[in-house]
Length: 233
Image 1 (cartoon, rainbow, N blue to C red):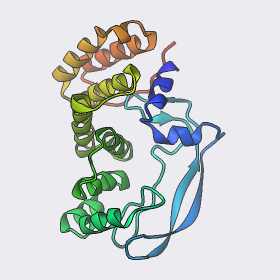
Image 2 (image 1 turned 30 degrees about the vertical axis):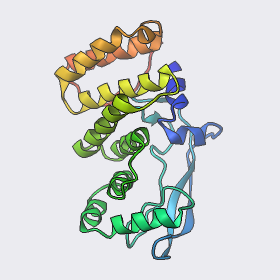
Image 3 (image 1 turned 180 degrees about the vertical axis):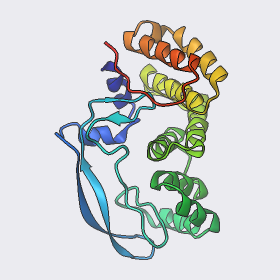
């Protein structure tokens, strides 16, 4: 489905890049050492997967983890979202995760939501598109109001001030914004948003995007706030 290519080109679903050549979902238990506190622990991570399509909230469909698991240190709840950190980064994150606020968040939320809030508390949330992707994937883990609102918040920030490499990147964020409005049951706003998107020349000339906008409006008319599999001819 062509819209998958649009999605992948903007790196909204980071796991799809890892899974392009995989035949099925696989996982493994690996050992990690927390860079804050040096705690050693084992964590079950995803190693590959295959996507056969996607949902309206851009979650991939198929034998694939969505999102891929990321290690979280058991004791201090630091989210190890990359392999290496600078001393300056670790100092910021250590200060953030030691707060009572973060520990309460980490206790109650998914790993991706904890990651996003950790970034905010450490003031490492300057990349609006990155933050949008983090909270979007948090919403795949648990589609609660908090993760949906955070995704919408950073989509709005990205559209207000971010530069996009091409029109497809901006359109992806625009469609995602409308999806968040609908999932939050803000149906009047979602309707106005998708009606405006329908008039966008880049949408009008793309059959799949035209179908997607029309499909979203059908869901809005039904007051449907669920995600649905995109399956257009």
